[in-house]
Image (cartoon, rainbow, N blue to C red; front, side, top):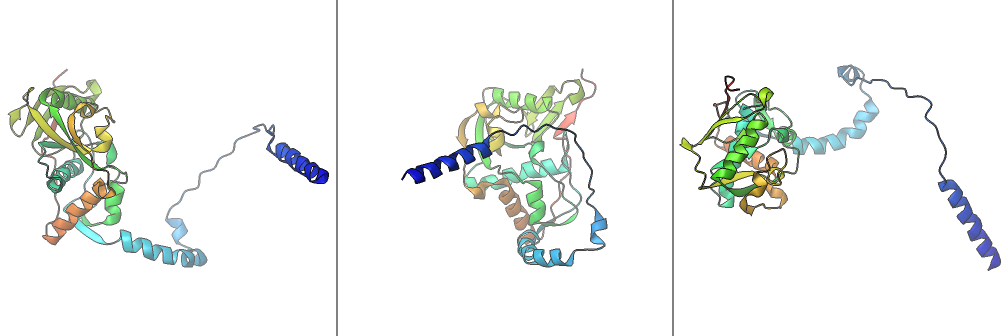
Length: 261
């Protein structure tokens, strides 16, 4: 028993010694830049390619299938862009499956992480555009809160908004202020209620759009199927079945009045 205790004591001392902080000092820092480009395609590593082949086959089976088509290259940009218009309109399109009829949709520019290239759209393209776990949600704002939301959008220089929204803002360079706002051809009634479709990230008040967090009657489904990437995927697949090439353009949903200071 005494020998066992002695052995345990030795082991404990060795463990403590191995865990004791070692007094290293930084002497220098060296760095180099490794450019990964087409030069590595000239002499491919056959063993590496053979090793990756079965994984590539599985990956391609998921990512490569064509889910739709777009009429031209699409890019997200402020104050308004074809791609941000499209994604906002897709939220409105998807709302029917939730028994919702929102007055407008808001999709943040920061949540759009890639462009779409003219022609075929694959699942990989959709995943690149919407890689986050953002999910569709709904909230009711008063007209006053909606105007606050529009002012926050103006301050940010623009965000994705659905068809029917008409904002005039000043340039982001001079403070980004809201000059005027209309919805479906009408002025905003401060006392009315407006149903907004958006994503849960914005519903939490992120990206400076905290007006959304102050709304009421929130509906925020948590299942993975409500992820925006699946809604976008469903939209493209539906359009493909109908033989429709998806098109979206800048329509003047958000205009910059450079004369306002």
